[in-house]
Image (cartoon, rainbow over all chains, first blue to last red; front, side, top):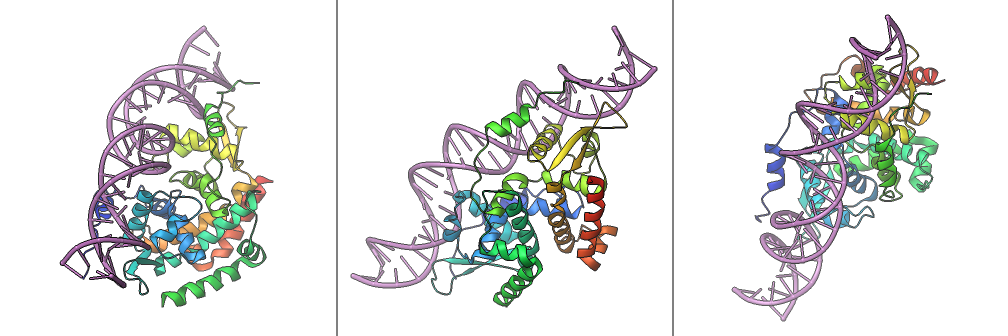
Length: 151
Length: 151
DNA sequence: TTAAGTTATTGCATTTTGCAAGTTCTGCAA
DNA sequence: TTGCAGAACTTGCAAAATGCAATAACTTAA
């Protein structure tokens, strides 16, 4: 087996772990992904078929490398994504959504719809228009697709 | 007319206004409410009938006063909430959701559902259980209720 | 004009973010 | 077995955001 980096980041996250601010489910959710970056990584995996660290880095929002590592570690620790050695290229990793991660789909779609509705500078592209026409179909289609990848 | 505080916070927000990180609607949404507090304020107004600064302060997550003022100003600036002098008590303000704010309802409900599903320490209470049974009914019921208050 | 209730600011310590540079790790091929 | 290239990760430092406690400003009503 290959020795990979020790997960300092996860250790920090785990050790410094604050209790949830409250037992409100909204608050607990935000404790996990309530920031400007986590859901963008989820989006990349969920809607854009991105798989790896280097692909996430290329997104137009230009996430910094340390933030990306940190968020990926947290998402993995929280069992939202899982990380495996890539079958095609053994020196890289691929990330995929767990069931828990896939269940973020409706949140992501709703956020996308709201964003498109209220920002002139966010023209609806293909997916955005589909959402406008039949949101629940988009969700169920993606759900099916993501679930079968999930196996 | 009463001179109220000048809105330094809003000025800062406006002046320091970064362009959106990208034209992705998800990213644009997160530019506005992608943090640990904004949606909790929305929740308080939307689901808990809270109206004023002092009520928001009392929530169990214990938001700091400066953060609360800052977020309220941003939400108001973004036209998600609107602020008026309270009819009952003229020395206080009440906040209410605009149409844009009300449209955050599905996002809030989905986040709530996900949070309750994946946190043992977030027992589903009345609303959580209703969501489990018939999410879209909960959404349309609240939508109706919020919209008539709005109207 | 003052008291009571409400909302907002300030200063400081701490934490998180952003950025740029450099380091470590892995597989593959010489 | 070494060296290289691609990929993932860390580090150091500056800047920004957060948390906290104390204080200030504002409004109404008496």
